[in-house]
Image (cartoon, rainbow, N blue to C red; front, side):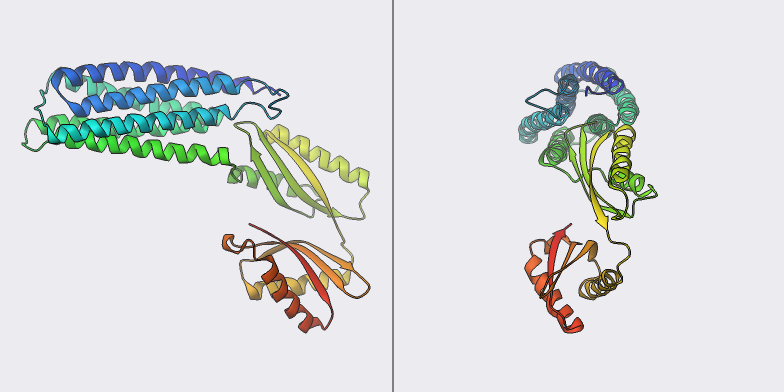
Length: 371
């Protein structure tokens, strides 16, 4: 399926606007910074140059992510947008280290800054332009649900703060003997490095594989549970292959006595609805539930009480009984705190011993731990 055209048209346009505005600001600041000897203005100009490169790479990312799926990439190419953002973060880090080197040199070898109306006008124009980009990127990012553009909006907002600081630096440099320009350049360099590191962490996370957007998880779960024949659902796993390229699996509990063809019809309808409503390719696994067995319900309540005594954060689902000749197997999934993953055997032995002592019967537990 090809990406929705209404998303990529605005994305490409936003990238082009970002390239143009940041290039103009970069050229202007680097020129006046060199002309009047202000390292902090020059550093801010290179910061805008990195922003222009970021917009260019974002634009390229949108173009490549629009490519349809093929045999080698059956899930599409939407992750190009994440790769573009990661490339931008590396570029920003390189710029940041260069600015840091120049700032240190400026601190040890200070030179006077010549303030002028032209320098002030360029910085004020930059603040206005970055305010425009802040609201522009935010508007388009919210419209097409683009993390890259929303990040660009935050970056532009931060640039407003940085450039305002540079403007203050230029003013103070003329009225104090302190090397304000060198210190200001150092702060800008550190800010650029911080931005690069933050962006790298944010883009690496979806590439490594996140658990899915919490709002999307809640929306899918609520939609499925709203189906009258659904008893419950669990084990929702979302795989993000880029914007509008989400694939998910979900276990849905339904009465085992329901007709299998009717179950299939209902679950197939839920899958189609989730694709249309949430742009998520959902595959549902049916968990048949025994609704009219008193022994299953009794033991389920006993096990829930035991788990709460052991750890109040334990959550059990998918409870099953499998009677054998000499023992009864109890199977369920158990949601535990992150630090307890891998402790299946210890938890199982503890619960088995407690349950056997309480019930005076041979029960064997099969537990699957999950977060």
